[in-house]
Length: 216
Length: 216
DNA sequence: GTCTATAATCAGATAGAC
DNA sequence: GTCTATCTGATTATAGAC
Image 1: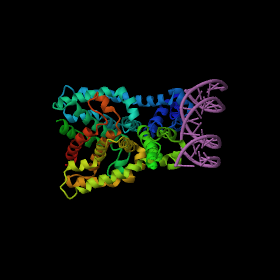
Image 2: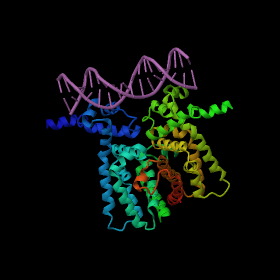
Image 3: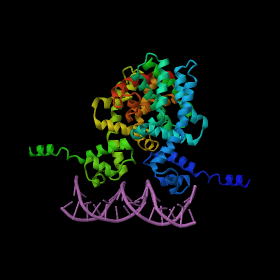
Image 4: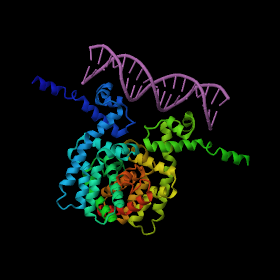
């Protein structure tokens, strides 16, 4: 019981490794890779500067560690949703819903860690340099499965149009994940960047009709 | 005529101020504000390091100078397009076309300077920190005009849905402007990030139908 | 695992000569 | 306007004590 008490008392002190990842996740998402120093990350995580290096090596390796931590889980869950419904008759809306999983995930967990990660994902998606380095690692397979699934419900579509429509969807998704706060300011409070629930519910029909128009 | 000859001979050497802006534009767009040093910019512009400071002051001031250079022109042109058609009966497609002006502009000029600037605009649009600082300066008025114009053709829409749909449009536009090259890789060459012509032509009907579905 | 101390480098900014 | 030289501070990364 001493053990338990000690664990509880030091709850904030244990697992420094994870705290480094959490702090890095938030700061990288907000300011980008070059906008953050290891010292800032260490300070936010309330650990020593040298500890980040001890656990993760170079700054670039830490960045990869942060990105990879949730990428595989995201991709796997997306795959499950996409393929589990495959035998059942899928509508265009259902396929898109499955792909917009990050939004649903954030809206359900309400976890700040996931919210930060999704903003980081948006950063990587929209950056010319990081997109090339990071996105292919895990997400490519899911995108190809998504495009294939779309062909079944949009038999008249050609590859070029499908890819452009996927690109528009990807952009709408990325800006949502980024949570820039712009929609809050423009709408004068009527909408909120962090309201993934509404973002998700309106986005599905918006995109589905766009796909139908261009690829129908 | 000596003057002319001298001007022509030194064509590459004159206008160092503009060369600094051009180089900064390209590098900031590619690597972000913190990913670029003044020394890199000076080297790319083939000028001395101290010259950037002489002309533009601090690094942050240079960043603003780069952003502002084309922002006002972009906003003004957008305003002209939106209001010139106001008396004539406007369709939803026409309104969206007017707002997607950056794409048309880049596709028509074929200018590398504009292409770089649009990538920089995408960087600012998707960054939580820069969006807040830079976007309100010039573009807010145009967005509100755009929303107002939409109300005429979508009389049943409410403010919240209109703003979310604008947000999706903004995301699709931003990712297009960013030219990350991802669509090239995913489509295995069938689409190109720099093909603003196609991006524009497919984007208008895609978005218009989305607006109709959600705000109709 | 954790921290102190430090090496080596590079950043932004400017003073001052021309 | 342009360049040389330099100041000041911060950054990554690591070696070594505990």
